[in-house]
Length: 82
Length: 420
Image (tube, rainbow over all chains, first blue to last red; front, side, top):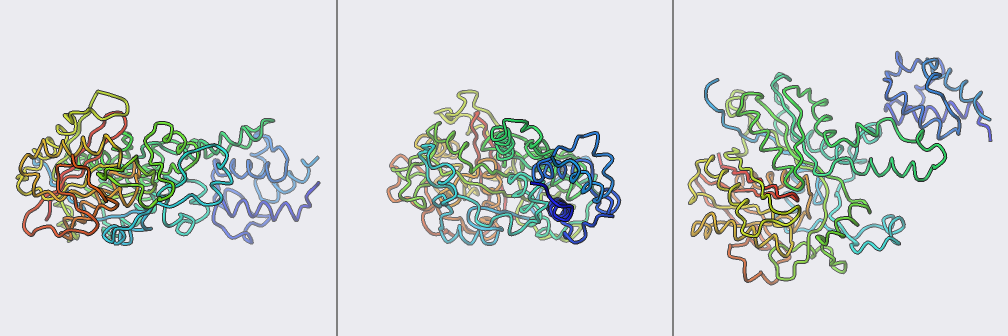
């Protein structure tokens, strides 16, 4: 079953919130993982791992550096769904 | 600095089977309460078919989820979570000392390390045989490493004089405090956050300790199971939690007007070199550790009024220790109030020596030795004066106490604490 972009954003916001302690409503598509949400590379890989499990997709390591914003990640996950 | 500084205790912190902080833990101990309880339904749902013969433990009283944020819980193994909770309390209790981070040390030990993290990660692979490696969390290694608790304490408080984690099984917590004392004596630090932690109440380690035939099987009476020196003792009760103390050079403490609980006057270390789990029967190694700590303390034997025994409630271990104390002190052991607080807390493994140091410090500070519970029929071979059921007052004047901690592997650690 494919998730809508809205569902992916909500699910990703939950994962980011658990990882960082930020409220879910601050995890908006335009936010940068590093500059706005202060997420380091190890935390980013944790988020990727949990997102892969939740949305049943693979996010290749080479791709992670291209996911600058929350919106980038939502789009990638939406496109990666089978 | 040419002289060797005295080392005092200025802060205490703990989270234990008896309470989420030192005050509640100490109050429960003075009151003779047991922290042992039957496993919950979730445990039996998960592990009920394994045939684990033990159905209870002294589990943590206040779950970390009540104290820590979600991100804190996610990035730390429970063993580190307990240590951080205890360290925050100890630091605040010491008055959040102002100290240059280069002069602040962290020595927090665990006997076993991040075992629950290891098992969780392995379970990810077992339950996802098709590509499960991508389910293993990136934080797994920093959470499972046994230096993780001391590293997190160092990070949180900016302790840069050194972050250490000495591993000596059930003596780890006491050895950490001993090493912290030595850091200050050696001039490497003015303040050290020191103690121990453990979090191994999980079906695998419980099965493994049961396999070594060291756990009590008194399933029909968990609260009565830990009974050091009782004739019907049948093994220890596995516990969990952490104890942390703030160690400080006496000069540093005096300069900032800190409240001083007690002084760590002697540190004694030895190894049995005899057997991987059994204590050496003559107690020679234990006596050497206690002797070294006493000699260093320069406290007269007549002034040693209290011993917090390692006494885990095993058939063999309890008596070897009692004979060692008698062997060392001779007639002077007659005026020693002996307490076996594991009767109440269970055995915190790597956390035990630190929690029992806190008890020993408080016993001197408040002049009362905590009780030993569940001793219905004292072992006739016990040749010491056991404090039973109710706390016992300790006399005025300069007094000292010994805290013993011994570990699988033949590790012996004795700390001598002095009143101030």
